[in-house]
Amino acid sequence: MVSKNLFDASNIIRFVFLSISFAVIFITLLIQHKTLVLPNNFIFVFYSIFVVLYGLTTVYAINFAEAIFDFSKWLLALFCCVFYYNLLKINYIKTLKTTTIAAMSITVILIIIAVIQFCQMDNHSLFNNPAIYNIKGLNVHKNLFSTMLFLLSTFLLSGFIILKNKLKYISGVLLVFCLFLIAILSTRVTLLGLLVAIILGSCLSICHIVLRNKKRKFLLRKKILTSSLLTICVFIFFLIPLKRIVKRTIPYTNTEIDIVNTSSLSERFALWNKSYELIEQSPFLGCGIGNWKFNYPKTSLDGLFRADYLDDQFFRPHNDFISIISEGGWIIFTIYISFICFLIVFSFSKLICIKNKTIFHLFSTLLASFVGMQFIAFFDYPKERIELLVWSNIIIASLIFFIKPANSKEEKSIHPVINLCCALIFTFTSIIGIYRFYGEYQISYMQRFVNNNNWEQIGRYSYKAKSIFYNYTPTGFPIDFYIGQACSRQDRQATYYFREALKIAPYHKQTLNESGRDEYFCQHDYFKAVSSLEEAIKISPNYAYPYFNLATIYLAEHQEEKAEYILDKLNLDYKEKALLDNADKYSISKNQIGNLVNNIKTENDIKQNMLKQIYKNFISAD
Image (tube, rainbow, N blue to C red; front, side, top):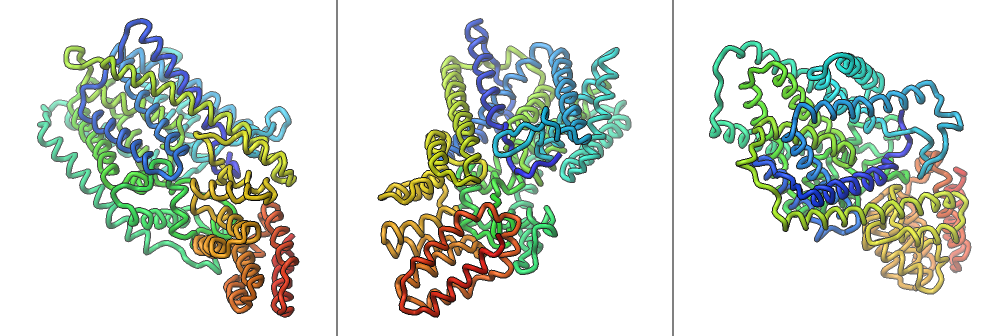
């Protein structure tokens, strides 16, 4: 079930579908002179404030395209919460039944996909058609698949509670299959979330049995106090203990670590440590929504084997909470955890007071699932996937509804100005989605020419893909990087595109390397070239090519001692082993370096021969 690719290739498609669907729904409501109702609940206010403030960090984000895309996802998730709340308000039993049937249908599809892959039928040409970025057929990310099963199991269990006749038993059977698949996949983070949900659900049931004949009433004052204390505890945990735990356990054994023996937990801890270093640089503002992946390399990739030695990219810190802190700052994070803590405490206090057995089990299932999702979010990144955001917000809307059932007299309909804002938002998100879908479509063609070194086609499709809403590929490269490579160093075109690439991804090691080489050999700017290459080395101490380019420049400037010094810092023997797995990715850069070395004219033949010999050893991996 595991794809070698660490991104979700169809995420854009689902974003476009969701955005356009919500736009159509909203337009339909306006035509029928019907308006949505905002939940009359301060917990929802917390949530709305978080989304707005988190989105406003777009203003100072380095990469606007990725920031506005992430903000759009949160806006759609918030609308999903409001819309589902309104459906519950109309008829919550019917709405939950419909949701369960939808969950059952999706579960059947996922089970079919699992069977096809487990039986290795996905190797058949019928299922093995190449998708974008070389993802074959039905391959999906394991964590995504497991987390989706976890969320679906919540509604399958709800369906088993509220449905009748055949649908009840179908829901129960699919629930068993769901849990079986989660166990087979053995995704530890999902198993942890499931375990927490089961334990919490069991404890709630026991409490209900013990207290079902007793009067229970929780004062608002006590609920607010409990929620505030819980928020403070969570805040302190992330501020001090977690940071210290991470710093004491991160592995920094650069000469011994290898990709096979690096555990996912060790890698996560290393990423969290980089994130905390990033947070220290901007604790209150953060680096901007969706911009963690552009900023964390400036803390150095040392300790991250796949990012430092190989060309793999990390797009998120594998912890939604740390991601929010690093992108939005501590204030926005406090609002977010306040929303979560208040929702949990108020849900629990309401749940204990419910005497109806069916409603209790339904409510406790939703609450246990929500808490379980927070544990999954602590080790994973469900907020990045639009479908997980949607199902999570269905749970949030359900909890808000049960905490305080809708009362039309107390609640306010959306103001006409808000209607206009919503219409503009859905139009805007639809445009963003279409632009990004078109960009992904063009880049999928571009990727086919990369391995063939067909730079004319690479430049053509890259140029067509680039837009204000799409400038960075899911493989972790600025689109301008490929356009710059395709320019063949003609005049100042390549330099222009490399500089543009560095504006949206200033700490991208490959771009810094290519830009530095271009600045010297094409623009003859020694200082800019050396600065870029030194920055690349600082970011990735074990990335070999900046060392060679820098040594080449030093030799060209008759600075043989500096060239020898920079090459002595490079542990080539170990890097050749690391490059064996990724030899095809390095062929272009190796040829370029080779040409540079051969073109150097220096009076010191010994130094030149030394550089050529090291380069020869370097490419022997091929």
